[in-house]
Image (cartoon, rainbow, N blue to C red; front, side):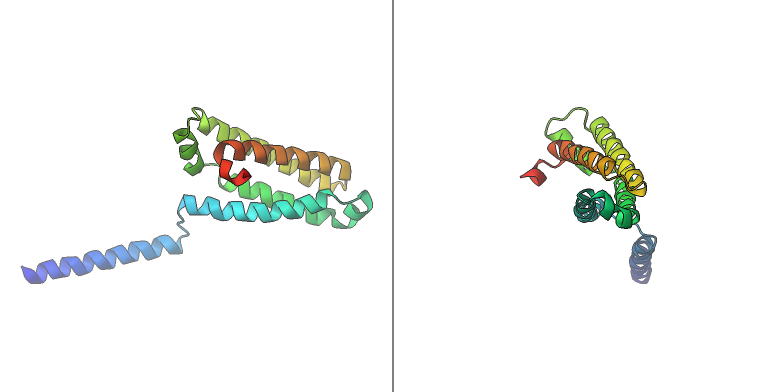
Length: 153
């Protein structure tokens, strides 16, 4: 009986380690950790896109493709965390009743503005890029006001 218990314990430990290893190999990531990582990347890309938005039309001629790539990357990053609940749950605890709807709305708006930035950059339209970048910043601020107020401090 003791040997059987020992065998069951060893098998349980082995199975647990195997499941954990397979989960890590398959890219299973804590969604809360993922959003923190994504936001760091978004912040870095935001700095780059801000610089692109300040370029003159002549400067944008040679850097439009790079600006479009950054805007598209940001849009993809934002899309990748649309289904997270971490910030929604925190906002609900702080009294935001429609937090899930607000999260989806501001994410959708931001993605749209970023795609507009990419299109403007591809067309080498510096005026439109500035306009859409400014709109994207308003979406960021609107989101942070509800979901990350400490980030605005």
